[in-house]
Image (cartoon, rainbow, N blue to C red; front, side, top):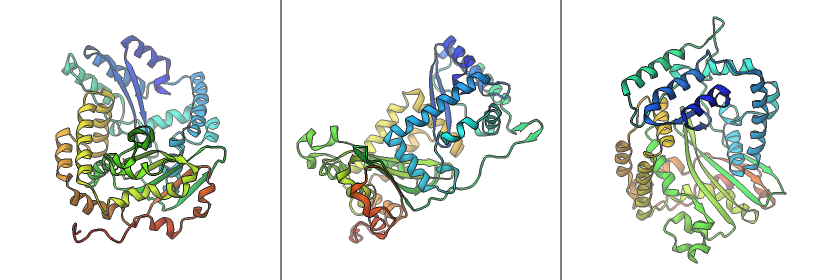
Length: 404
């Protein structure tokens, strides 16, 4: 709502800036792309909007409530977002991490402008903010002074009418090993999400999860299916070969989602419901498969993808600034490209991947969410040993070749 206020829009128009808003379950970020000689004005604009002196308009607030309600409806039409929302809900049942990212639509009419101001004063504090300026500002010293003014306008001790606000929840989320099924027989395809618990952002396993995400990779039937190279076993990536043998599966994604005190490593599969029984177990199959065998060629390709992403993201201000902001907020320091490259290079060996992947993915508790027509998975509508056994995969873990 702050970035859609008339004052912010007028400031953006005067600068001719490009605006990008990032929002996830813990971090909200606003990126302004301006010319080098406009860096000071951009910092001033952000300081003005996010300071406590800035008051929102009542009529604009009511219009924003309608926009928020429509966005909530649009999430249901996005099968990926809806599946991930259900996965978080069943994975973190007793924690705010499991709540919908946009909140409950039924609560939107009850929101007041005072609630929004209180939320801003509680969360948008100096100790919970990171201001990232990348590029080549025309006057670096003056820009730094503006950044210091920005911090002074946002108090580190949130107060309202002389009373300190309740602190933001500090409860640690613990994953609930469970399954959620949402049936919609009018949908043509089934969606399945699987989540493994992970440690916090910047932990000792952080870089391995980044590497493992690229090792598993994504699948798109239009690009990696049998229609592309006639035979799925001609693909380079092992996961593409396995998924290509199931022509009804269209999409597959693996994502590492870390937060301040935990996270999830998720897989998402989208395909025809006739493959429902396979899809329900395919998400954890890939992770447990890589505890048994890893092709060295896949390891090299995963490392190359990470190197390419590091180079490409450094040239894109939005991704670069967001990455720096996450590093500062979660770890208190910038994790540079050289450090990431060195750590990834140290892991680029198949035996190391097996030794590291087994304790993280083999015989682990998982959360599962399915959304769509479910005629083929009625027998799996409860969390039983069959589903849990899918994380075991095989007793032959090649211990004689890759000892743990």
